[in-house]
Each structure stands twice: as structure tokens, then as C-alpha cells.
Amino acid sequence: MKKIAVFTSGGDAPGMNACLRAVVRTGLHKGLEVVGIKRGYEGMIERDFIAMNAHSVSGIIQQGGTILQSARSDRFRTEAGRKQAYENLKAEGIEGIVAIGGDGTFTGASVFMNEYPDIAIVGCPGTIDNDLYGTDFTIGYDTAINTAMNAIDNIKDTANAHNRLFFIEVMGRDAGFIALRSGIASGAEAVLVPETKTNIDALVASLKENFYNKKTSSIVIVAEGDDAGGAFEIAEAVKKQMDYYDIRVSILGHVQRGGRPTAMERVRASRMGMEAVKALLDGKKGVMIGTLHRDISYTPFEKAIKHHQEMNPMLLEIVEVLG
Image (cartoon, rainbow, N blue to C red; front, side, top):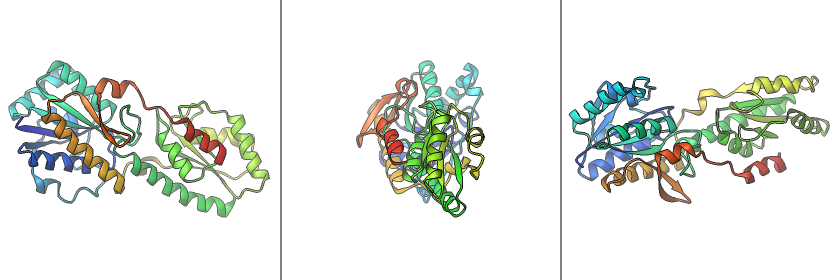
């Protein structure tokens, strides 16, 4: 293998740049030519390629987002789009690719490799949701939960000052990992996640107990995909039974995607990027690089996207007991 490419796809995540930097510099160290593909699969179809050198990734390890940008690509879902992408890659002499993204990215890679097996693709898990099977933590998750925690801490200050009940919605349409850990870290009274069924009556009973025991404030963290609805819907349901409580709602939104990646994020992303290049050179393809119990793991794309990471019941118990 003489020439590889790297791209970022799907939702951006802090640490993607650190991973990209590691891929480029490891590739150069191994004597490879490295190409960056801008805007993910869409850039692959449009042949939006740029030659990468050590200077190309200088000073980016601390930046959130992705310097290669990211985009959704409906055209890549079609046979014609994938054929155009393949022809562009072959014309450029690219033999291997490191794909940094989530389940949509790896789904596209799996389909592409089934059609064009001579292009090897290895993935690095870049998603703040931490919902991919085969790794303890994904790139972006640690930064996202710290960003959420800091925002919740700030909201808690004003909640205490006014004796208010806040419902704070965090990202997590299908997975509640951001809600769970940021909720524990910020001392929330309750955490509502898609993985468990929400009982509004039980929630109200718990909040009433806090209110009558003169607790100065209460914080409820809601993952956006909770079965009872988003933070506004749940707040309205609670308000019907607690109209005497000053209830407010805050949606953290895309603030969780941005920001400077944490130290652990940068180290994890750098390690994954380096191992992805090594995997390509070792003849591996169709696998996601992960870390399980601090060791590097290789999980087939199909398994990584079909088997979602399970929520640790011990963490749920922590919320119940300490909240």
C-alpha cells in the first residue's frame, strides 16, 4: 500500500481533528502518501481531494469540529454515486481509507466495500453519542459530557438562587449516555433516557418529596429521545401536578458538539488514528478501531452498527440512590 485517504463524516465531534492528525502523521511516518477527502462521501463523489503533509495538520489537535468538514450524502446511497466515488479513488491511486464517523459512516463503508473490495476501509468511531458497539468510549463523548456538565453546573447556580426546578435537555436521540454521565457528575435529581421507560407519576412523587423537604432546587436531565418526550413535554406534564413550583426548561443543543477536546479525548483519538493506519498496513479492512478495557480492539462494521452499546445498570442505580 502506497497511498491512503482520510475523511470525517456524519455529525462532527470534538477530537476528530486529533484523530485526523494522527492518521496523516502516522501515514507519512510509514512512507505513505496521504490524501484528505473534504465533506465526507460527498467530497469523494465530487473528487474534492487535497494532498496532506505534516504541516496540513499542524496546530489542529486542540480544535473542535473537523478541518476536512462533514456532510450528508444522499448520492452515496445510490449505486451511481458509489461508482463515481470508486472511479475517483482509483484515478487518484488510493488503496486504503480511514473513515472517522459513526454508524451512518460505517454503514456506507460496508456497502461500498461489498461492491468494491479492492478499496480497504478502516474506521475510527467519531460520535458524541458513545453508542457504537466495540469501544468503551467514542471520539467526542468525553468532551460532550464535560461540556454538558459545565452548562448544567451554571444552570444549577441560578436554580439555587431562585428555588427553581429545571428540566435540561441534552443530545441523545437514540442513546442516553450523555444524559446519564453528565447527570451523575452534576448531581441531578433525575435522569431520563431512551433506554428506560419514564414514569411521570414516579418522577413527580420524587420531586414533591424534594420540594417538601425544602430542597433549594431540582435538576432533571432529559435525553432528547426519551420515550415521554423532550424536556418541554415532560415539564408540561410535571407542571400539571406541581403548579406551585417555578419550572424552567433549558435545551443545550449543539453547544455539546463544539469546543476544545479534553486531554483524554485527544489522547484516545490520537491512539485510534495511529492504530487505523497500522491496521490498513496489516491488511485489515471493514473494521472499527476501538478501545476496550484500555486495549485496542477491532470490531467488524456490521457488528459495530447493529449492536448498540448497553447502558451500565450500576450508573442508573447511582442516579436513583444519590439523586
